[in-house]
Image 1 (cartoon, rainbow, N blue to C red):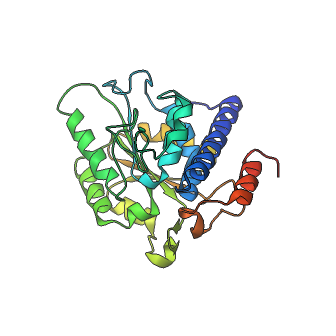
Image 2: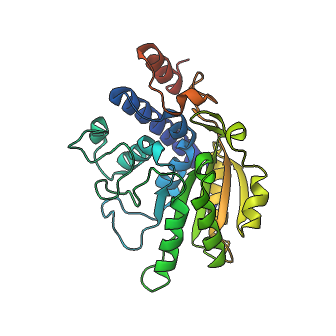
Image 3: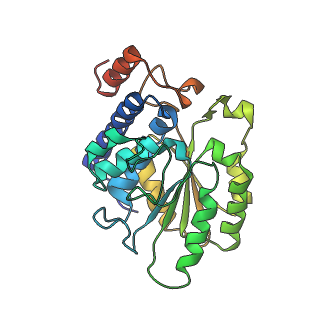
Length: 278
């Protein structure tokens, strides 16, 4: 496991803040989108795209690249922000999110957007696709690791658990699931709508190594990503406890902001809070 310096942590914290600012601007400009689940994943995306992933933005289809799958496709704005800031396409393109003639669709589209590995929107499919990628690389060719970011809603889908069964059967140690576990979804608290607990026991019963962290603590995120690479006998899930709408006081832990758009006053307040002015 690598030691992570204070300067690296500070840099990634700034990256996470920029991802939230870009996401807020995109949602407000487009008058559509999902700020809550995008904000909860900001530190995870910052750690992956600005430190951990083996990638080359100048060559998005580099065969040896690590694969990242956004199974919770409604958080597309945060992914686009990370990709743009990492250099996959100009930051100015974020202003064209959702345009018919643009390459940034409402949900990720692997055909149109450089750096997107899987088109997603239907929840829960990411893990099954990751298993397919893991098995495909065993047929020969370059080696890489596959990361899947899943949500509470993903884990309420039967297909997610089918993917987990297959990952365990084939001992897909090349697969790391990161669960953005904020316990809030479109219509309310996840534990009221369809409880997932005891989630650690379930993942273990399905044959996964389980790591549990605070998903906004970048040192814990980085340590867990490193530790997952050292597990060679089974797939790993990082259960990342997060806060829906993290960083904006009136959005945090509120189901409304799963897919709502701030008005002009709310937008100004949110931007000020993210910039540290409140």
